[in-house]
Amino acid sequence: MKTDAVRGHLDGLLLAVLEQGPLHGYAIITAVQQRSGGALELRTGTIYPALQRLERLGLLASTWDAVGERRRRCYELTGAGRQSLAQERSAWQEFTRAIGSVLDPAAGATGSTA
Image 1 (tube, rainbow, N blue to C red):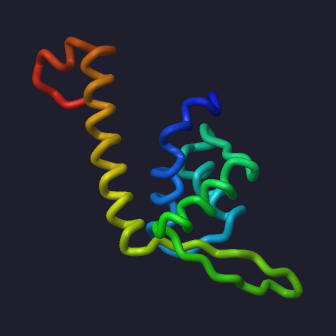
Image 2 (tube, one colour; image 1 turned 90 degrees about the horizontal axis):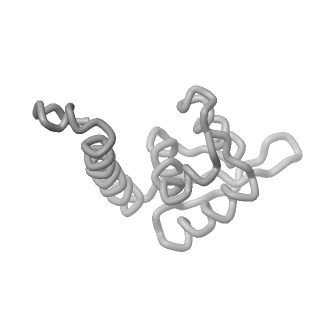
């Protein structure tokens, strides 16, 4: 899938994979890839600035974990992050309904939701 397709949805993706608990950066990348069936591959150069921005916004909190002699930063959702995730999900559902009604007008005419 094109990297450009993820733009505008990266925050929601990151918040969603952190909903179940804290993860470090590489585990977040892996979770997105696994949950998308391999269709989405995030790069470290994309994910870490986004995680830092979400932390500055108060949507994530981070702690340092030691693994052997290595340290890694783990991120988790804050209360504000959970609220933001709910808003992201709602916006996504509205977006997919609107796009679905354009791409498949027959489905919209029958009253089904896309």
